[in-house]
Image (cartoon, rainbow, N blue to C red; front, top):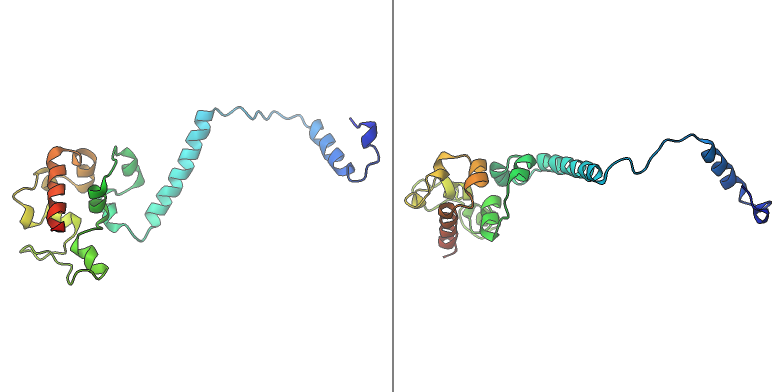
Length: 169
């Protein structure tokens, strides 16, 4: 409905025409038909799919992917990593492979008799220098299982802390 003051005002014709057409539609759109919980779920799924695609296509994090092979595995973890756990999950920190890569160590090899590259995985599961103190679960379970079920146990936590302490000496 046009008011008398709007009649003949230049520039109002097109908006008036569009409003008249829109008013004539028999629309059944209800903007509150999706519950907020469903909207949140759709957004979470959308961003999780972006995270999955980014994780899959990433050319880095090879070491982390040994512990966390997929985003669904990460989402299933009740894990709040501390500084030391983060070092082991990323293979960054005092490990010779990392230090050698950034030119802070002359060799990536471990001091153990195996002379394997000194990675977090090697130290956790294979290095003979730590075999006496290594909890059995670290040699019998896969890395994702260790992370999911055993990473917060006293034995594993103490073992990892001990390795980290000796690496920093």
